[in-house]
Structure formats: C-alpha cells, structure tokens
Image 1: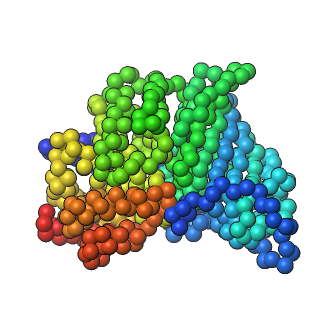
Image 2: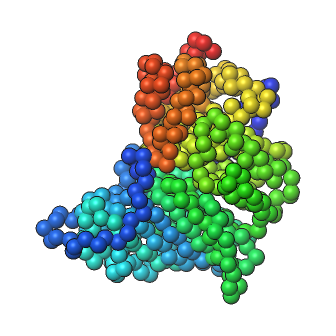
Image 3: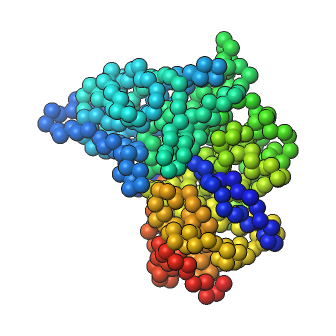
Length: 487
C-alpha cells in the first residue's frame, strides 16, 4: 500500500511524508480445497471444543479465527447501488485443525439467514463482528468440511480508531470494497487474517450498465433480467485483505501478456490521460521487476483507478492493484505502479504471518521504487538512500520498522526506513548475494507466509555473513544507525 504523497525534485524521485490511508498457512503452503468429510460420524469420546475467536496476532488479537484452515472461498453476491442492498451466498471449504464443536467466521454488519455445514443445517449466532457456527455434529481434526452462509443487508465500513476505515464503500455509481488491514468481512464471511490464505471465486451481480471488477482471471459475464454477473477467479492463495471489488463505470483495457490476461479499469469520472497511460505500463513495470525478483507470481495483470475522495491510497490487491486517481493528477506516475506491483511478490505471494512484520511488505516494495527509478535513469538507489538518511525526521529513527506498533503500522519508518534496511543489507552483502537473496525469498516462500526471522536466516545463509547486528540496528533500534561503511 502507498498513501498519496507529493514528489520532491532532488535529481531523483523522492517521496516525502504524507498521511497514509488504510494503505495462509504459516507452513508456507495453502491447504487444498477441502471436500465434505466422508469419515464415520464423530466419536462422542473426542474432546470437541470451540475454535478461537482470533488468529493470535499480537497487534490485532480479534482478527481472524482459529481451529481450521480455509482452502477455498466461493463468493456470490448481488448488489443494487440504488438501495445499497447486498445479498450473498458464500461457500467456505476448509479443514479442521482441531476437534471443533463450533467455529467462527468474521462478518461485519450483515444479517445471516441460513448456515449449513456439509449440507446439514447449522446453528449460528452473532457476537459483534463474529459469526459463530455450531454444526450438527463435531468436526474432527484433519477432516475437510464445507460451510455455506446466506446473508443480506446494507454493507458498512469497519472503523479502526487508530488506522481509519476499510471495507465496503457505497459510491455515486456503485461501490468499492477495499482496505488494510481488514475489509473482506464487510461483504462476505471470512477468516480475516493473512495467515490463512485461500483461493477465491467471485460472482458479482450488478445492474446492467455497470462493471464489477475483482481479483484474478476474468471468467466472463452474463446478463439476464436487467442484471449482469461478472466472474473472477484467483487460484493462487490470497490473504483476505487483498480481495477487492469495484463496481461502477470504467474505461476497460484488456489484452494478453506472456499468456496471461491483462485487465485494467479506469473510472470514467477521471479524464482520459495520465492515469490511463500509467496503468497501461503495468506489464512493462512487471517485466522489469520479474528480472529482479524472479517469475511474476500470478495468472493475471491489471490495475483499477478510482476517484472516491475517501480513498487516498493505493493498495496491492492481488493481481489487480487499486489506485487513487490522486496519484496521477500531476501526470504519469509509474513509481506507484512499481510499488504496488512489487507487492505482488512481497506482501501477496509471500504474505505476512503477523502484522508486526509489515516492513517485509512495505520495505521491499518501497525499495522496488528506487530500483525502478534507477532503471529509468531517475537517480540511483544509493542517492535515494542518501537523501533519506540525511533528511529523515527524528520520529522515523525513534520508530523501529520491525516492531512499529499499531499506530505506526503505515508510518514512514515502515516504508522508508524499511527500504533503507533493504539497501543497508545490499551494501553489506554485495549485489550478487543481495539479488540472490530477494529472488530466493520470493521463490522459496511463494504462495505462503513468512516472518522476519526467516528472512534474516536466508540472508545469512546466502551471504555467509552474520547479519544480526545489521538487522537489530536498522529494524529494531530507536536511534539513527551509522551510515553503512561501504556506501
């Protein structure tokens, strides 16, 4: 994610401070899509217990849930912008990781009418933004199950006192569902934490004349009775906050690149020009990043430009980032495109296990901007580092990017000091080892989740250097580190 910021001209493109908007499976592999269990009825002697109402994240204890891993979601919703009414049926294919008497899904503000588990009616209650489901019989650890939830209502955003709001936004033409660190639960039931990645199929039905854009590969559209259904499929594991939908009137650009569909949309309320030209360069930027980070990790390319004033950020929604039109008011801007596309490797394919480690996302994506600028002759990564090292305010040095705390989750320290940490690593190990580190990180953790300690261990293994002092100083220190000796 990147917030709207203004450029400074110092021989290179340097982004200054700004208000940042709400810009899986720990083993590294997503579970397979589960089918209903065909085993014998659960034994009454087993100790069935409720699943946890939280994934155990230190920063956000109530986000996500425990006791199961989701393999796949099928989300079918119908939305009428005229009444701001949404109705939906979501199917969750998961596997129990403990003997479950009940389990939680995150769902905010919508009314549930019916729930089944493996085809049998299940009881359900609401506890604020939690949907607690009790199946007719216990779910045995290791067995797959399928839950289906029917629901309806007026979607609402989720408001975080520190980070702002995220989720479903009703717009003049339609709606946008977007946000970090949470948003998905405002329009479908979900295990809303990045540690439980899954595949997604979306079917979004809207009035004729409107487009519904979502993640992944387009599956076509069909119309009947004044309504059009748009289908999308993201078959690589995806963290829930990376899901999105944008409903409205757009200028659409489609094509194929390296055998993958390219599908981009720019809202018609933005005059044709810089936004269109910037998004049109998505595949060129992706190809450069592929040369640095290794193979592009997803089955589709694209981008979406929106103009709602409540969205003042760009977000790396999987395979199809969303950009505020504000990024293109001063002209073509491929720097923000490079940032969000870098996240497809770092943040999306390699996702967080816990939110504390967000520097792994934002530091690497911000460094990708420096590399992109250098590739295009707009200043070197060293120059970008120098400007920041000399000009950072004290608040950046006093905020450790490796443990920023919730109020500073999207702070300059996480983004810019995070990128400086990446550059300090490059200087310490040399270019051959550095670029091997980032490519290996992307390859080994592809489609999975990761923590900082794993990144440090990989860097030490490839470089054959002891790097604890470097990372302790740059990620966790509260004073400005000494300038890297070789810089």
